Length: 294
Image 1 (cartoon, rainbow, N blue to C red):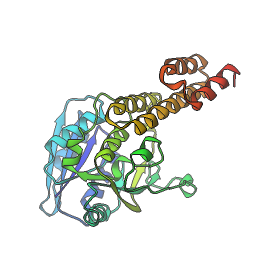
Image 2 (image 1 turned 30 degrees about the vertical axis):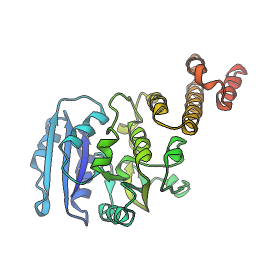
Image 3 (image 1 turned 180 degrees about the vertical axis):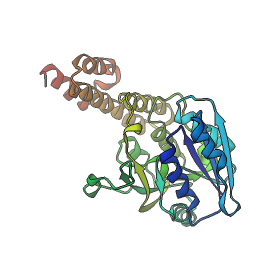
Image 4 (image 1 turned 60 degrees about the horizontal axis):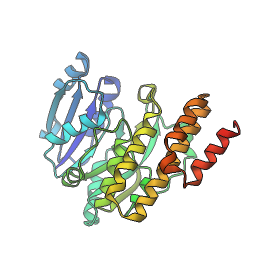
């Protein structure tokens, strides 16, 4: 059995097709675990009305609103019973063969305890974005910790399937992170197992106004906390990689502040990172740009 983990908060117009894409899977030995983060009456009424097709199990968790995707996913993980877990956000979609293809990939690679697929980004109507035609996709598989840390491996949450035991052994999602909790988990999974790849776009990641966070800087803050935390869990070579990525992350944060016209915040980002970032070229380049007023 595969436990399908779906966190949700309102978004009923997107939730309906997301769940329909689960019901349409060609592999049918699944259970659906929906963790509702204090949604409105309409969303909860719809969830309560769901009937599992072909006798599958639906578990509904009614949670008080926390606004933490990590906490909501972890609550669903706690109720899951499947050997594998697959994650689907409530505004994204799966192709019908998604679970079947990933399970086959894992069976073909018994050394791998998790798997991901390629993906297509779509708009609010489910139509592929025009820039998808030119987006460079570089597949990564096997030992991918370094690739994830550098941001080279593009792994989206709804593309991941893993054994439940691997996710729990890795500590599940870190609820202390304000953002980037998904990439934080993927790095911890990669420390414990190579990853299998289905090099086919079986996932449709929806981009819309509701999922563009207002606090854009939280992604940089979450990434820095994740990189810093993981330094104590890796060997010296990887520790150096993580420190270099922290410096690059700080430089990118400063550059984004500057691009938004906030020079003071740009300087603060660089200053706060100085203790670990000063040995790295990315930090110095950004510092020089700020000094020259660019």
